[in-house]
Length: 176
Image (tube, rainbow, N blue to C red; front, top):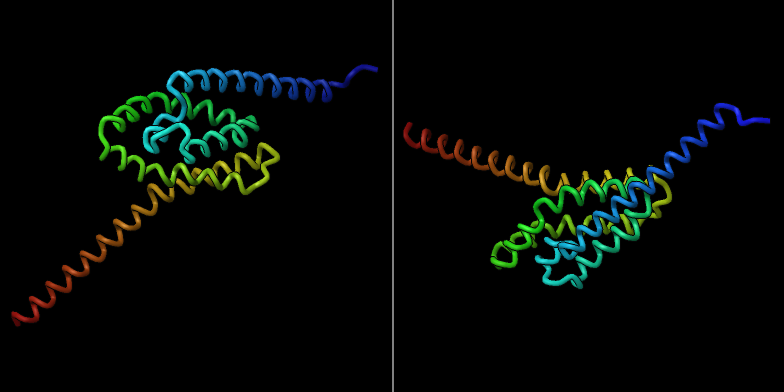
């Protein structure tokens, strides 16, 4: 008895997924080779002073033990590496040349470096879990770097405006 069309389609889909995973693994390997050329996590290494710094090691462990264990994590790392290595060698060089810049970058990337630690607290057994937790970490970083500062600026602006209005009212009251 032959394989029905639905089973054949499922087998083709599974094979295609396996081929895609293998292709993505090859791309990550290529990205890893590119990263090795630049000696790894360039900005974090320059900020924290060594490839052996705990923060840099933690990033590598999460990459290797969490992200690269799934197709979606592998795809994310491939895209991230293509973007990251367009600017990271330059930023790392600037950090090495200017200690003030290095400390500013260090303080700015510390939340970004530590938020992936969240992934260590979850048992990620499927692609959908990786995508869900990954999106959660990305949203957390958006909140830290964009939403919270915007909220603080808006509150400060509101506070300054209300203080100025009170001063105008007091000045007007005094003149009347």
